[in-house]
Image (cartoon, rainbow, N blue to C red; front, top):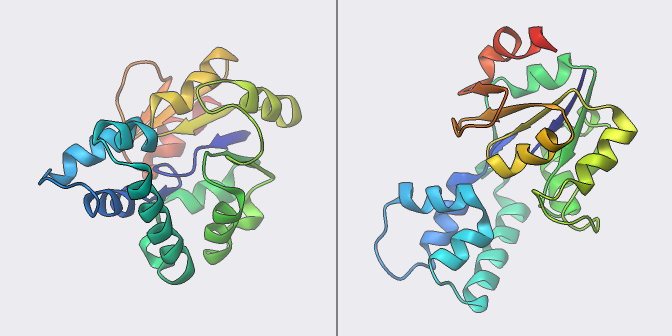
Length: 192
């Protein structure tokens, strides 16, 4: 089995970090749940929704870089995901995150060996939900499953006829839904 993984919000619980970074720039008091709701659409969407300036986004990126340099423990993998990575035949990643950051986080946790290929935000493919990066990975690795936490993560897989799974998201459109990875083999793996 070959699984295409989204990175942020699927392999790693990075939303608390991004929520905190945005909250530091938002000038009004907004509950974290509402910030998270906008981030779940996309980072760009949240920036536009809260009217953040390019200077504020730059400060967020600088603070994100500081976390990458010294506080990697804020970027936590979801429980149970490593067992799945070890068990499936092949894993690939498609993420909007820059390659250097993706590889740095994977390296910190010793997870580089689990991934056959990574397509990142700086590889020149159009952003999701455009299917170009998924088409590329499907031709090279014959994908059986696409796992993401947002609808835009799975739409390219649906377009290519690949089974899809939404993680911690019950929006209509996926073949499978998981709230945690403990149930992966029972709810998803046995059907592939």
